[in-house]
Each structure stands twice: as C-alpha cells, then as structure tokens.
Image 1 (cartoon, rainbow, N blue to C red):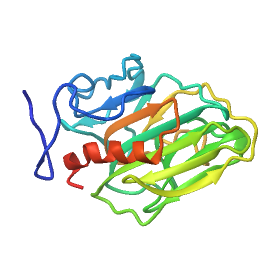
Image 2 (image 1 turned 60 degrees about the vertical axis):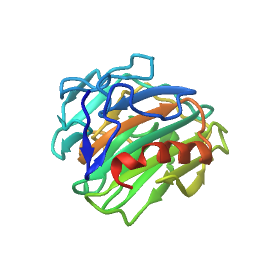
Image 3 (image 1 turned 180 degrees about the horizontal axis):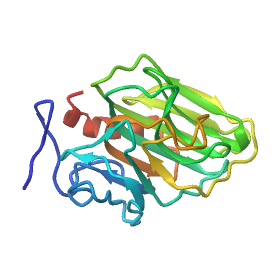
Image 4 (image 1 turned 90 degrees about the vertical axis):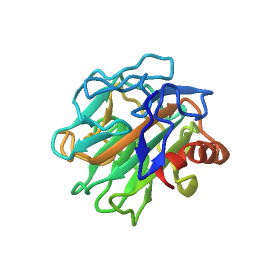
Length: 240
C-alpha cells in the first residue's frame, strides 16, 4: 500500500484515505487518493457522481498534488449549475510557487459576467466570491506566502438577493460579503488553473503557478464547524 510524505509528515495518500465530510458532497478530486489520480492523464471525481476531468493541458502529478507550471496547465470538469438561490461550498488545498499578475484562475465556474469560485487576485491574495451579471461580491485573504500549504473554504448560503458569501482560511473565517444582485446563471465548465471568472479576462489568461492537492464542492453551505472539521481531519498531511 503506497504511503507518501509531505514535508516529512506521513499522509493518508492511499485509496479512500480522506476523512472529509461526505454529506452533500457533489464533487471531490484528491491527488492523494489512488481512485482519483495516479498520473497526469486524468483527475477523477470520487464523490460518487462521476464528474471526471473532461479537458486540459495536464499539470504534473506528484503523488499527493498536481503541479501547475504557470504557463498553460489546467484541468476542466463538467459544469456546475448553481444560481443565486443555490447554497454551495467549495474547498481546496493549495500551495503557490508564484503569483499571477494581475490575477490567476484557481477553482471556478463560469466566464466574465456570471461566475463563482476562487482566484488569485494579485500578489499574496486569494479571493472567493460570486459575480452575478457582472456585479462582484467577494472576500479576500491577503498576506499569503509562496511555498506554504493553505486550506481555503468558500461558502454561499443560497439567499438570493441578500445571500452571504463567506471565506475561511485554515478553518478560520476571513470575512463575509452580501450579494445584492438577483441573478446568477452559468453553464460554463468548472475550471482549475486558469482565469475566466471573478473579474478576470474572458480569454483564459493568467494561469496558476503552484500545487493543488484536493478540491471539493458541496451542494450546501458548510457551517464553520464543518469547515474546521475538514481542515483538522487533513492538516497533518500538510504539516500544519
């Protein structure tokens, strides 16, 4: 049975290794789990919903992460269909080698106009938000460092006009923002590693430079206790 090490700490890099919350889990991609990734030809969904990678210029698989080169690497997955009335959460384990300028795509759905998810908004900044009809509502985590693993959770409560966006870093709430627009609709693919979302270009420029280990999407708003549970259940693998 393979065992991998991150920063000298033994991981759960085995088949079915994660103890994350499974209720309402809509998508789950984990480079540490051999059911999800064994090379750089595909990244498979292990949520049980079979939403595997559909396209991409594959990053390099490093046994417990995918390494994106900051030039043309990306993954693409089948579209999500959340609206301003959908409660949802997105999570990622991520480590930056460098910063995109002015911003870089991380884990997102949609194109310029209607979109939601995570991006790298300049040096040392990650933001999570929604952009219904071009109106951005987001929260930023700043003063981040390269070469460090971070766990980010972004949630939305499905409150429509008045719905609340939240961003957590390593299980701690960073801040909130309130949607004051009534329409969010997109059929665009779910993309990892390049920017077609929160205020970026519509051309797919500004790619991610770094490592991603795990990605999750829930069709509910995770509570702070649930976010903290997921962080604590996996933090040892990343020496946090």
